[in-house]
Length: 315
Image (cartoon, rainbow, N blue to C red; front, side):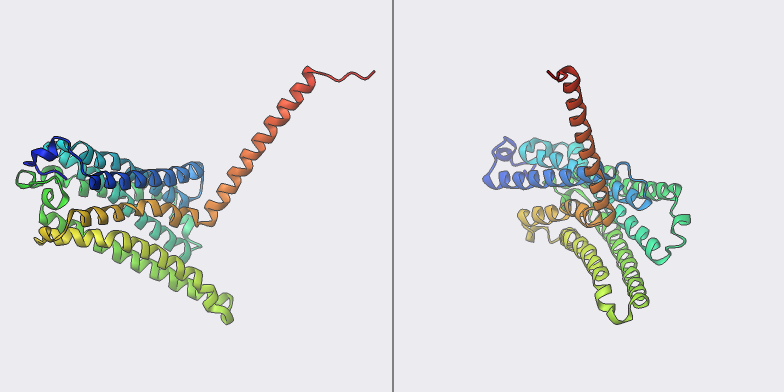
């Protein structure tokens, strides 16, 4: 990223390394949008309450993908870095989309906890009104957290339009870090409860084959928490290190790498929460059946139309 005083960079001279990062961001952009738009298309008419959370997650992850072109614009058009408004909005957009995505992931964890631990009360607890309120609360919290840099920033003192220089160190340490720790702890607690309940149910169903029954539940917990931690923990570590004054020891490539890793969680979420879901697979099969029926009916219509237009005559 260009410094405010780096006139050679601001004039538009790009290095191969910069174009390489633009290519990485472009691939990430396409991957995120394709996966999440497909999920939205499949689940758009689903009436299951649990799928409403997955659908909301796909929408917010699509927003994460849509922030990437604006992010890439700072590399292609470095002049954007010297404007305070465009620089601040760069982080507001990314923070808003990512916060919405992470809070939706937490809402899915809570939904699955209620569905597994309290299966008989689930339908009475998780109504449309409750789902809407949960998603609205998630959106409000994301807006509150992400808009803080608009009125609390250190842009005047920053030399580059980078997160570690534009966002105040206390915003990272007092807002972002505690929020991540709380969310991560909540997810650990919820998924450990889910796994524990799965163990109990497996023991009731088949005491002689408990490990075999518990293995899928353990794999789900490991997949969800493993991907979430792998994607977000390195970025948080770098952000905290920058806040503590170790900015000079972190190379720009390291920062960009951990940022891409964090954003890649939006590309993995459709696989974790939708495509591996049996209900999602059934919806895809049903959608495929409907498309095949439409094709067959259209072929039959065309064929019958031709027969009516050219009736056969027996001699």
